[in-house]
Length: 148
Picture (cartoon, helix red, strand yellow):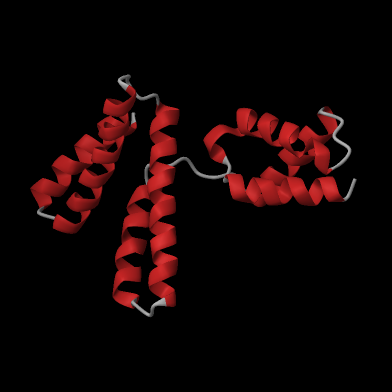
């Protein structure tokens, strides 16, 4: 489970005195713990993945801002944190796999245009879960439905 892996990695980082990695891992553990406290329930693996994806998204946004501001030192820090978070997330589907899933969903739901986008997106989110990026999925669905 993700929480166990995080705890083990935190211990390893403490042993190796890797302060930068330790800081990132503790931040991730804190984010998971905060949601667990707020919701007053144990987190499932999918919940943990969703939280980590949120943390990753925050760092991507910060990295874009730092790049536009010319702060390459801060961009490198954000990229380092993103690389650590990536180790805990499932490997995302390739664009070919996503395209095939979108085509299959559009066909199975008999979607005929943009008015069916919500229905298709809901179906794909349930089917693919955390394996697909919502933004990329939305673009592919929109392109597919526009061709119909």
